[in-house]
Image (tube, rainbow over all chains, first blue to last red):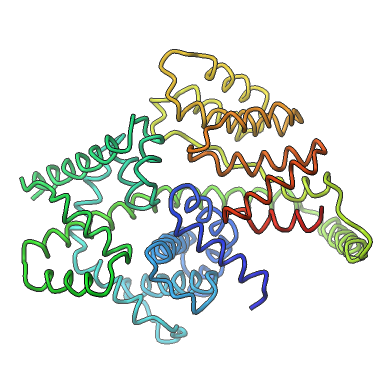
Length: 189
Length: 251
């Protein structure tokens, strides 16, 4: 591993863990630097481009989340880890569509990745309900919840970005938005 | 409808973010095993986070798709249909790289500020408001920015900032960032610096602003000021620390 690459990973990891705008910029940089993975798994796994793109985006979100909450142990380069997850998601797509995957290479850490995906799949119908209801929430709840739940903005930043007067108002609004989501879910159930 | 238990919600966040110590974590896990209500709330919390992550993926998907389209269009334009032109270009680029490498490895040579500026300046992607209804003028300014109509984009942004009716502070900071960027492309670097400097320090736009202020300061030849700005970025572990370090090494 060259010194230059290590520094690059170190800065990306710090930026992602800092959350907020740093995380967004680091994510954008990783996307720009590794968008080529889409074409790589498209040709290796014979996937449609849209499916390959979905795999890449899903993997990128996974990596950002895992780096953000400290689960990424740094045993490999970020780019390698991102590629592994992208590839695995492609294999998972083929498996779900009952396509033959016996000829494909097995990757390390697959057991760990599979656990996260299986956890999602077990609750998939409930999960899809939540996803639909979240979309119908609209602004500013959509913005506030994404800023809090994925991008890791603090309450001061969330207040600024969403035109709210203070961090305490933003915090209160966040809970209102989550409460609203619960209300929508109750109607679905 | 069950109210969200804010105390538990805060605890769930801490657990997911790895902020609990070993004792707290053990206690948390035992609670999950013993207390069904607690476990249900935690499960709901995780599902909410998962769904929010899916929403973020939608945004990322749009950006990635745009990136792929841009690369495709760029490839089509660059390659063209004439293979000989392509080979001549490749050979020409290899010669240029060889010459540049020879020049750059000369120990007595340092890159000029202009060269450093050119090699590090990359225009920020436009920032579209979450709801176009709320900010039609800004959205129009961003569309013009994306289409490289920088003077028109600048005019709209300057009008927005001069409109005192209902201007939210955060919008002024956002507008000033893009006023600065437009001015940089239009070679009005002094005006760009003024715009970046008027962004509030606590603003989430400050990170980008300080990086571009450094570049603009470099461009107008104020080397010492530029050095101070880049050193500040490194000290703050800014996301552009690596680039700042490269520039400082060359100056």
